Each structure stands twice: as C-alpha cells, then as structure tokens.
Length: 311
Image 1 (cartoon, rainbow, N blue to C red):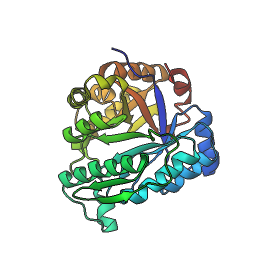
Image 2: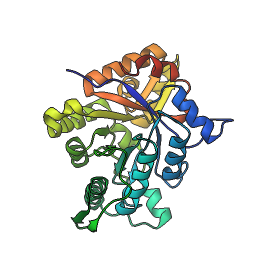
Image 3: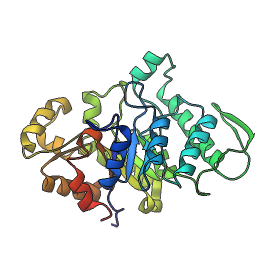
Image 4: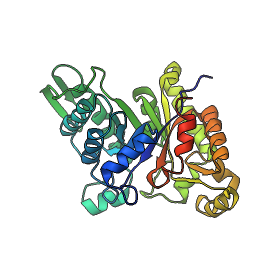
C-alpha cells in the first residue's frame, strides 16, 4: 500500500520560553515543521485568527491552521472572509481545521448553548459547505437548517481557485465518514462523550478502537483514500530513554497495560529510534502520516522531523 509522505505540525498555545511569538513561529519554521496549529478553546492560547495571521506575516514557508475551529463559535460567512484573507496574504499557506465542538467547559463558561452531538455535527457539515461555497468563484446561495446564504459573493477569495485544504477531526463514525468523503486531511481521534478528556476518551484512542475508526474512513473514502492524509494529534509526546516507566505511569489513566499505551497512536514516547519506528508502524497500519507535536516538545522532536519529513 502506498502511503503519504511524513510531515509534521506543532500545536502552539504560547511562545517558547524566553522567546516572543514572532521568534517562536520563525523557530518552528526553521526546525522544518510543515504547519503551526493553534487550538480553539477559550482557556488555551491566543485567538486563532490573530495568531495565524501574525504567523504567516513573519514566515515564508510555514503553513498555519486551527486544530480545530469550533463551528458553534463563528458564523461561516464571517469566518470565510477571515480565513480567505489569511490564505490570500500567505500565498496559500492555510489549512482549515473544523470540528463540531466537544469541550464542555467552553460552552459552560461562555454561555454558548451546547446542543446535542447530532445538531453540532449537522451544523459543522453546513458550516463547511458555506465556507467552500464562499471560497469558490461567483455568488453563492445556501438554504440549510442552520445557515441561509443568499447570492453572497465571498470576498476576498483564497489564493487559489481550489481554496485551502480542509481538515476534519473527530472520533465518531458519522464525523469520520463525512471527513473521509469531504476533507483533504482526516484527524482520526478519540471520541469524547463527556465533554472532557477522561479515561473513556483515553481508552477510545487504543489500537483496537483506531482499527475500527480507520476502517470507517477507508470505506467512506474508497479509492480516494490514496489522496487523503491521516492526521494524529498527540495528547502525550516525549523523547525519553525510560519509555517503560513513562508508559506504566500513563497506564492508569488509560485503564490498560503499558504496552497498549505505547501503541496508542495519540501517544508518542520513547527514544528517538523507538519514536521513528513507531511512526513508520503507525503509517503502515493506519495511514497516519501527519503528526502534530505539542508545542512544549517541539524542540526535542526537531531531529526526527528533519529525518522523516518528506520520506
């Protein structure tokens, strides 16, 4: 089976220690990361639109993307203008990450209503349709349950006629099948039913669950799976010579044995050689080629990024 080449992103919630934001994003670019991602939670990091716009203004090759924008927080007609502007001023270096929302704290503290999962996913599907329609040439109309657009010509347009790539992340069957059929990049993640990352969510990231999720993706994508990228957002990442003890400490959180923790594709721990071996194994088994490193570990993974990128 042919796999997509490796590439890597880093998720930044704040600048590196003793560095400014500008110095940090330039350092990320210099280390060879493909993409700087920013989260979209009220208690994490800079505002994603401002963070992405400022990053592309001071770099030349670094892509930027939200991981991922909660579709409940912004109307897509407004968001389309901001995203297209970032893509245009960066000459096409934007990747658009969208999600249906999962973090209960965001909703409770902001006062935004947290609808049922079905409604949130319905809204995300419409949200993506509106963004794509406004990115495309000419006026766009849309009549959905959540959004109504009438002959609106989205301005500005993105840097290219095809628009930026879309990344859809999720852990449920419906979201993953939608992503496989409609997104360029599929974030195969754990399902988070409680609104917070807990033991149930951790167990849903174990290999047997990921096998099932990737099967949904491959079935829905069909032959187009060869053109898709599979994205892994790492919840835990560390270069360490003591992988066994690290995994043993995590095993209680995951409610499983240390070896299963090591194999879980949203965890990446071990020596440099062990990590490289794991990345190859995960791409072979599940297709993961696009891995997102936590910002506080970006420097420690730099040599691995340099060795594997593009291979």
